[in-house]
Image (tube, rainbow, N blue to C red; front, top):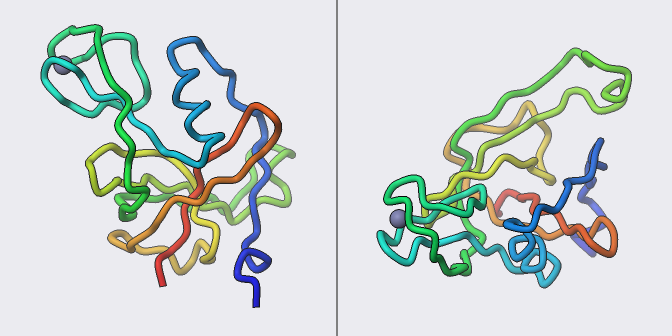
Length: 143
Ligand SMILES: [Zn+2]
């Protein structure tokens, strides 16, 4: 059985706007790679992408390839749609995933219902191509 067919991909309400300093992040995602900025001076991993390190104010950086593995650091489940665009989207779970390498991303978990989500669950990234420019990083529970 094709596992991918069981996964329901939430359609984003608004597509991200690609800023110049974020363009490599989005290009990497379109190649199914999750890359995070690493400061060339203090080596801190920083997300979201930023032109300058918040720790040491250094501008040079590299783009480190992440494993894509992590765990649910926190989450919130929205039950009441506060806007008509969310009418068919509740309950909606928004999660913060802490990657094994440390950075935290806001995303959705695709293969579990919001009522089953628990802090500490192990997850891995799933790349979903939305259009020619945007691929989004979602996550799925590791079996
Ligand atoms: Zn730094």
